[in-house]
Image 1 (cartoon, rainbow, N blue to C red):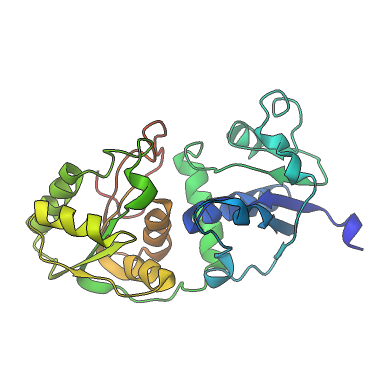
Image 2 (image 1 turned 180 degrees about the horizontal axis):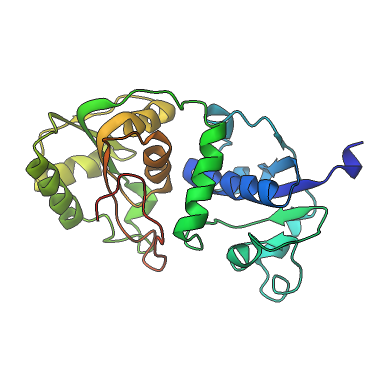
Length: 270
């Protein structure tokens, strides 16, 4: 029976934030192309130098999704420039925007990409709406007068991400938060305490560290009334999925030194 079911197949790559973008892209293709089932291939996560695991079941219901390896996705066809202009069922960053609203008749769709810098505002809003319907923690309350500050260290200190969420960036956003005069507590969420401590000293910040797990850190950002984000997709999705009226968000415009974020987050001040 499984062999005849139409599906959206998607290769998962990277950490939680990247996986949410990939699942969101799968949900949109599933909805718009009327393909009810999603098969997520997480077999590539074990090949990363940094430890990666499938985090999606901790955040989403995944009612119409399953996890299983796909031999076709192993070929990485949606990443090939000479294929994507002609094969509409192989979808990557290069052709996602062109195909998302196109009337296609393919039985199966194969997704392989990050689906971030290719998104415009309209598509991001649709993706967020689809993800929220499947999100487990949709009814959490806002922590008023709390400012969560996400500081990403580690690989985000390399040339690919350098100087996007810089000391100057945090100083500028912190100054704006203080001008609003509503933040009573500042909590840093980070994967690199040494780097975050040095940065906090440079901007004269009185803070505490989040002491939680990855999920608890995600929910802390989601619940905080004020959020100063890094360019990490982890913080972007924590903020977007947790947005409630009255939340205030600051975020870098760039995702990497080469990739611009072409959408505004709910509650974001420009």
